[in-house]
Amino acid sequence: MKIFRIKIYLEIKVFIKALFKKKLNFTKIDKIILKQTNKNLITYTSQLRTGFLLILLYLKKKFKEKNEIIMMSYNLKEMVNIPLRLKLKLIFCDNNLHTGSIDMNQLKRKINKKTLCVVLSNIFSDYETCKKIKKICNNKKIPIIEDNAIYFDNYIQKDKRHFSGSFGDYTLLSFNIMKNISGLYGGCIAYNDENFYVHCEKYFKKKIKFNKILYFKQIIIFMILKIFSLRILYKYFFFYLFLYSGIKNIKFIQRVIYPSLKFRKRNIPDFYYSRISNFSKKLIFFQLTDLKMRAFNHLKRKLNNKYYYVKLKKLNSKNMILFKIKDFNFQNYLDFPVLFKNKDHLYKHLLKKGFDTKKVHYFNCAKTFNFKEEFPNSQRIENEILCLPNNSEIDRIFIDKLIKEIELFYDKK
Image 1 (cartoon, rainbow, N blue to C red):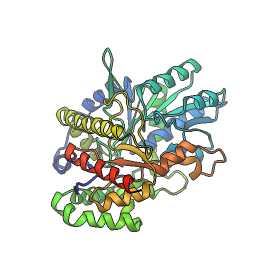
Image 2 (image 1 turned 90 degrees about the vertical axis):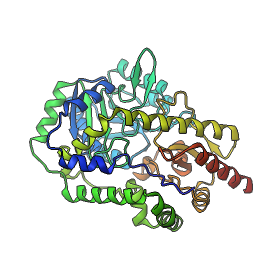
Image 3 (image 1 turned 180 degrees about the horizontal axis):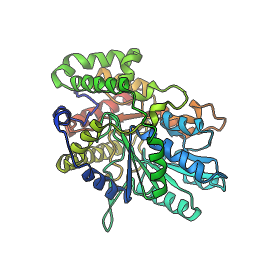
Image 4 (image 1 turned 30 degrees about the vertical axis):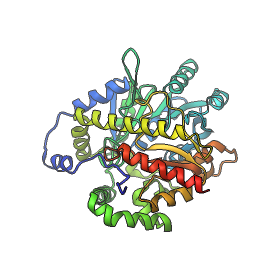
């Protein structure tokens, strides 16, 4: 069942449309984002991490007596690098293996008078945990920075729809190449603090340009991945390239598939302070305003996630861990996460059987940055996670065959 695992939601026709469209009413996308995040103000940035940097600089200046930032150890390396470069004291919390979310007992224990902010990273977040974090931080008057990079359009239906991204005082969105709304590069911050708006404009007055070489490379990667996704070419050529690179761990190809592998510890580059490009905003506009396509993609992922969950639960296997999902609209994963024992061998086995899975997700950053405290659950997730394919090309026949191969693999063991 050779189906390209990676879903590049940005379509070629949208790319071409954005090239030739001169003027657009960008207030339309402002309204969509602000409504979802329950905020009044928005600032667009060249990347999500630019928004994170601007928020931390602002909070550091506003609360000079505080210097500790709390976040999950299982995270993106680039996000952890930023507070460290700003000389802030990072306080990590482990994951809860039952929910996948941040360990609430550790969070409660580690919050103190020096806590500058708490970062809510929506990687496996469930609604109840998000609510608890908001309540704790509100009571202690600690700002929440909500990283909503891979949860956009996820919601829970109560009296009305409550979206992920609506819990933080500052909400970060990403429109990078692998996201379900993609501008190739780009991000934004949604918030209510008018002083923060002034703070951002002060930095943008420097008129630092985004690195054009990086942007051009991203366009090339976008085109390459689109070619990879052509079914006939993928089935008879590119799959075998991925098979070989996966088994032999060829770094060049792996870095195209897993951009997070490109990370290196470095000082904050100047282009982090640049605005989003106008072309990226055009790309975002055409996708955000296409409500029908967004609803279709959300529903398709939801049905696949639910089917994966039910089928894998029935296996009742000690060789895997599933994070508890209470609401498939809220925990609507772009790829379905499972922890597997003997992950590397399973990954190679599935590749040989025609199934490409995502073996690199996030990292135990406490280990990456040489922290003394250990976070066993974060390390276990890094070691054992495989994300199973989930996009509009994936159907129940594919899922049944994939799960059957997983079952056969462990039966042989």
